[in-house]
Length: 114
Length: 112
Image (cartoon, rainbow over the protein chains, first blue to last red):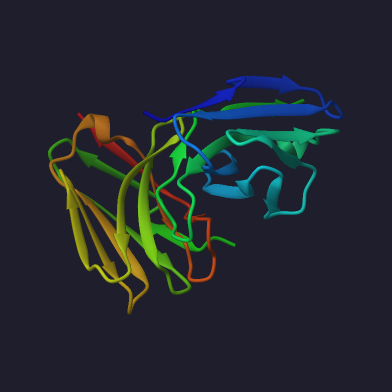
């Protein structure tokens, strides 16, 4: 069966510090991968998605970047965090192809920038 | 901007009652999906309905889709305290391959 891991679960970082959140998927090959951010009490904002190694689509211009160094690894980064980067970050995967399939989410990372 | 907007934003009911949540979207779609999120957790996929389907059932869940009105509803029958969660609709949008756009969610509280 497929499993998606995210870490860390919680993170408190000062403004201006770097960020690296990691997401890995097990039990599937060539998945589509997604990073979302959720502000408190709000819906999900799609940040990045990837359909293959090294292929990243950015949805919102911002202080963050994403990379996919391996087929089942997706990394969200920032060189200098802003207060507005605080939120709940969710990674998700779906089967690849031209059709939109259901997405499977990781447990999330709660980021607080102080 | 959000593709989907759920209504109501919050709903409080008693255990055993039915809960209905609505979702409206803006552009044509291939399919619409509903997800549940327990507080502080990741989302869990509930059901997918294709644009050529009008109704779909899964256990205590019933989803309807009206593409002429660009709207969908999620009905949870005989609700339980464990159904307390936020519920989101998500749509793909024709031409928007590989990604979903999520609505703002309905927070459901089921009182025991």
